[in-house]
Image (tube, rainbow, N blue to C red; front, side):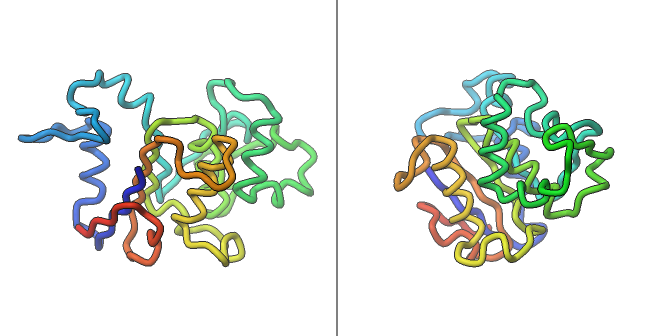
Length: 193
């Protein structure tokens, strides 16, 4: 399921994220993704199953590898493949440390777009059942996706993650938040707030 949420600043996009993560509970009704009522699922399970790629990214002080895979579940090869797909390896050509490159607190030694690419790689690598993409390509260099809008680009990442080439998101729920509707043209469902 691919849902594009479009709304101006203050329309309630962030409130919707809070409800999906159960940081705020709905006063009435149910919140369902597919056939699953999120209020019937434990809070820990919900948060483990959801990956958020935010517009404003804060990175950890540590290595690039730690920022992408803090629990050390993935192999170096899987991380490098993910970095290749998010076009981050071009920044590592002159960095001897590779995955051991030091990231300053908050990602201060990276540009805004580079921080988003690292967070995007983390989200793709996590293999979450639901991914919330909050204007996550707002700071990415325009050379990064001249032929595809951000939503289309993210579908490419899901296909890479699942070893697919021409298929959809393999039963994953993908929510993208945008200020402009032209950034989510390929969504199965578009909603304007």
